[in-house]
Amino acid sequence: MKVNRCLSAIALCAVLVLAVACAAPAAPTVAPPTAAPPTAAPPTAIPPTVVVPPTATPKPTEAPKPTGVACESLKNLKLPDTTITAAESINPIQESPGVVVRGVWASPASAHGTTTVDVPFCRVAGVTAPSIGFEVWMPLADKWNGKFNGVGNGALAGGINYPAMKGPLGLGYAVGSTDGGHKSPSIVDGAWMMGHPELWDDFGYRAVHVMTRNAKAIIEAYYGKAAKYSYFTGCSGGGQQGLAEAQRYPADYNGIVSGAPANFPTRMWPGETWPSYVTQKSVETKIPVEKLPLINKAAIAACDANDGAKDGLITDPRKCNFDPGTLLCKGADAPDCLTAAQVDSVKKVYGGLKDPTTGAQFWPGYEPGSELGWPGHIGEPFVIPQGYFKAMVFNNPNWDWKTFDFANPKDFAILVDADARYGPILNATDPDLMAFKALGGKLILWHGWADQNIAPRNSISYYESVVADQGSEAETQKFMRLFMIPGVGHCSGGAGPDTFNALAALEQWVEKGIAPTQIPASKVTAGKTEFTRPLCVYPQVEQYKGTGDINDAANFTCVTPK
Ligand SMILES: [Ca+2]
Image 1 (cartoon, rainbow, N blue to C red):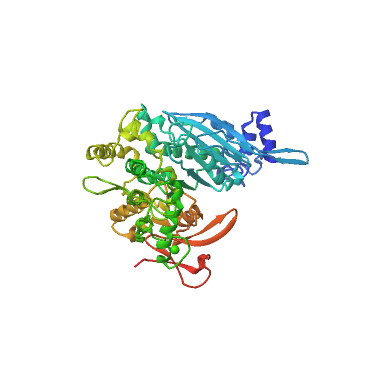
Image 2: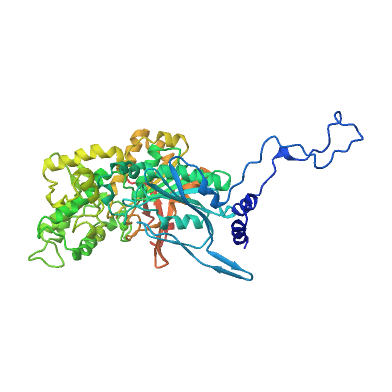
């Protein structure tokens, strides 16, 4: 194969021209127009007997623009406050005469895990001060689709998101990822926060911007031209990163997909701890995990048909008035009923975290239909927020969550104070997206209604804050559209249709001006499509037409609820 031979050529000789040809096979060097040989000598300057020799081509007035460089040469690229630590051609395809062996390249391990790649690409890794790690993976020039895809992290970041880079690379995107400015053994580990306030801003917003700036420069150097379009895709922590980009660095991306964004952590993290506080008060207040299917089944039975389709999905849980009190035991506690204290706990999980003095909602609750995802929240407190409480709120690595009383106004005031202090660093809640909109940016925001980690109503709150800032829904939907997805859990999973291509819809919008009115989605289990649904632009919801296969999206329309 040509690429493989080229790699050998690079290793054997230092002729830059060879390396250029190898690195950018689809970008042939074209002589600039000024370098064209003259068709004739000026008649007045040369006597008719003199023949102009063919080597007398005039010198071009400017040097030809480079069409790319060898991957390895990117090691020497100068970027602000940045050290390139690796620039290497990866080629999992080994070829000898008559034999092609397709192997795989295994990525390093990170807090996000590892991945394997089976296509050749140029891998560049680096660090920008103080410690923002990043990688850029670039397909060979003849496989590049001309676009850049920045991919987000999850939870507390702490490593390059290798698994998220694989897919876009295989589709022809140049891909970039950051570690969020720190390295952790796990994305849920918050120990890095303690004693390192200089890393908080990088995590909150700076790391993705720096990665994006670096990636764009690296891409332009490698291919000899900039990416035509740049897209950011992320969910959860990555959803927060996408919104932070739109708000703070509106020129970074042409389009952003933000899924289930963790964009309000100073409220979300206390809110995610609330269910543990409620349920772990005593033996009586605990919700036995084995009773979650009972509660889930009752909630869906109570509300499924309200939307006109008895399909196991609650289209808008806000309209579901499920009362867990209907499960109250007639006598002693039993597996098929709830005690009064358990009923109270379930109600409080649905209700979310409120100001104990005013009753104002501090963070929304989890929705009816999400109960099967509660096990991580109704025992020991959800692990992700612990770093925030210990490092930022209390500055005490030994802080014990059991000493904190959400119902005590003095304790609650600590949360309010931390919200004010750290919101400007961690949150991506600014409704002002005017600059992003003015630059032509497009934003697809989505959230699963059965999200068991990030309360879905937070995404509606953010969307509505943007509508208020824009002045109308119509102005907002010119550049930003929200999709609330029934039955889908945190970023994926749940009973709902969690397989869809938001990036494809975004590209249509950015590149062709076709705004998504719905996104086709499906529920796929073990490779088999169980059913399909349209995802509708909020506040629209999907509605069954009343006839036809209930598993077929063709029998649903998007309607504005009455
Ligand atoms: Ca339904």
